[in-house]
Image (cartoon, rainbow over all chains, first blue to last red; front, top):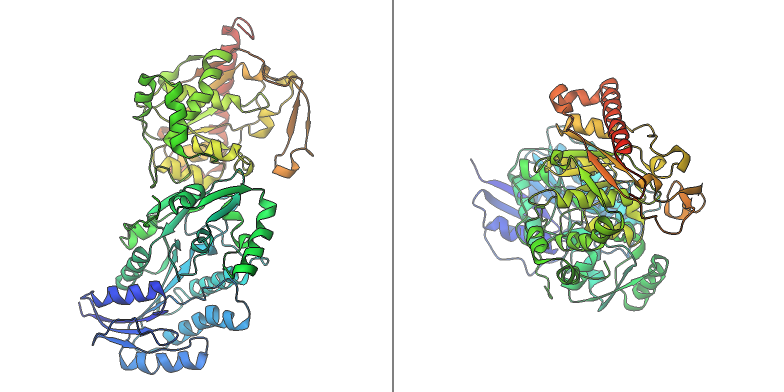
Length: 315
Length: 282
């Protein structure tokens, strides 16, 4: 089998960077086109690696990238990992970054001379969590289509659904990987931001099951999706499934139960005062009801099994 | 939970006998990491559940169990029983009975109504002892991993039925039969005799339950359950899987007929239990 050429967006973020490093170790991959948003000095130097910083919120730049450098390098697989990480920022620019970029990549890839596969890193946050839905979340689980959901979630759902809608419409193979929350700094993890506080307030009387992923496992799943021919949606769970209180304890924090109605204003105040990103309103449901990704399909089709547990500071 | 599993384990060690603790150490479950299964069950809380339910089972309700040899020692199965008593102590006694009469011990996964997981504290404690919310996805996932399910097909209308209608089954919902056929799981009928007299009911209120999404809240005539004697009668497994192919789970008539059959089996066990017992408290 000939080695393939891969383009990775979001190469300045932890998952994208890790994926680029893993691909450099992968003998089945020849050239790698890493696309960070800005200059990414921390990416390794390698003759197989080409780094092209591009602001993907501009459709013109995306076009120039795909029909410029990507065409010259004969890119066959595009891995799109770039999503706006901050829940604080909203508006048209963020939407362009999250959704329009995805839409542009799709339509351009469909008519590209060398691209045959697009792998989108989506997010478990697209799923609806509520008391009457299964704890184990399969790929056909209802999505959070609520109009009252924050833009952070709405954009992710729209990008995901946009990719899903194009599956099977053209010869472009599309794989959507709905990854569990990556519990690491710089990934946009709401839970990581929540656990940054010494005292973690939580809803009294509830202790839902959570599932979290590591950067290594996330990059590993994306790498497997690059080499697979299968299309469709794949849940990517992490190796850690535990209740919220156990996560708080394992992170070395003090969990204080409070009535749920007080948590939203408390965390709104925290966000205003300290600039933290965590929004309780965005996480209310999953702080009450369990939601754990069912990775059966990823195991069967991608042979992906999470094997890198989180290094819990106080475990 | 307000306390970690280590506290639950310490409480269990203080109360349960070394033999019982050794028996519970053999408990089989699917650890999803950190000692919990994906649904939140933890063996230390199962032991704590025995600490809580044990005195009620042995001393308060003095449960007499018969036919428990029909409870499968391994593999998927659905335990189906009548539901009554205004508070779900019948489920707790069945949970305890299965734990005591299986070796290695098995935790029956009670499939509760949707509102139960949204009850603060109670929902979490029940989940730690094996309860799951009543969605088809949860039941499917558990049967596929060979778990034992406990379903009360009468649902909330069964548990809140008036005292004068005791031991008259409400129509069974068909979901359990569909699951049994689709997943080739035997159905073990069970009659709970005694629970229907534990808390005679004055009336029910829809308004009281509204904040928690509970369809009806019973208003009982007594503040705590009466010390009735429980009789649990387990029937022979009904092998729907040997009569029907999994794809026939989509046939409404087959599923309805299978449901009626299981309901008749439970009703038969109830009548047997009522004839057998010497009195409500005896």
